[in-house]
Image (cartoon, rainbow, N blue to C red):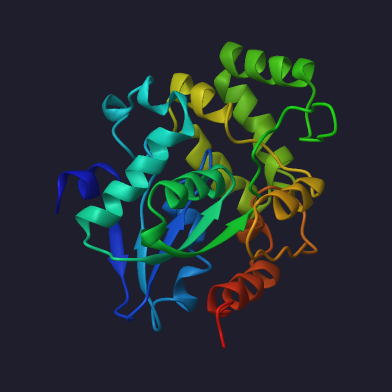
Length: 247
């Protein structure tokens, strides 16, 4: 196993001719794709990895300067593909990894045949003619709560983000991976990955350029692949398998 593979806990499953990369968002790790994975391994080679800063990675590897922007994470994705000698892939990114994949595809378009994203957002702060979901005061309060008592913040944020109460299996799963993060790293990363209102998807659709498809699913919360897999999995599979370049 190469250095990059080991640092990101890379796993390669399946033996298909085409490769799918599954990328997780803030507070989770590659286990967030556990419901989708069984539907892919018979037909695709599937690459799973953990973003640097996830509780499953070595916190000593987290470079605060490198990961002060999403470009650092994007270059990690490119490095993983290069080390695995994968010429191109279908990239499935949740939340912040949606934007990480977009950046990586701009830097190295040859490595990506398609991006499939869930709950992605380019900006969480409201602005003139843009609704990202939060005012600056909201974000300041959230970050202060995270700084002052991380465990209490996790307990409150998990059900809010997922949708449901602490008895929910999905909320418990997110709480587990969220608690595993080191608080100072969680604070840094959370500034790039928060809940996303539906209107953001339309903004992305209008501003991405090229061919894009938006589908709003009848789910609640920021991690629908955990909380509503019966709804989300068929939709993801349809978009993964759909070829926009069919003649």
